[in-house]
Length: 117
Image (cartoon, rainbow, N blue to C red; front, side):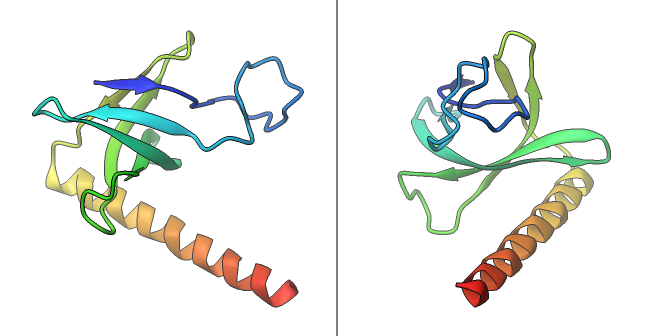
């Protein structure tokens, strides 16, 4: 389903930690679509909705401008991950609303950062 290249689930955020991940690098996942096509995607965010984890992925190959993939997300103790398709319209609506809030907050943070500089 996907290949984990650089996704770090630790919360240390420090290059000196023992997690073995590159905290300065962009987090990239290779996503395999239903037709067998592999797409490299940047991890935009991992977030929770109603106590379930979700992930937002931005295709790096620009399949369609502005396209973002949203999946359920499960990370295991060994560092492997599963991406879980969102099946119901209700769940998808809740996840997209939560992701929209994340985008709005990121834009607001960028605006404040520009004012400070």
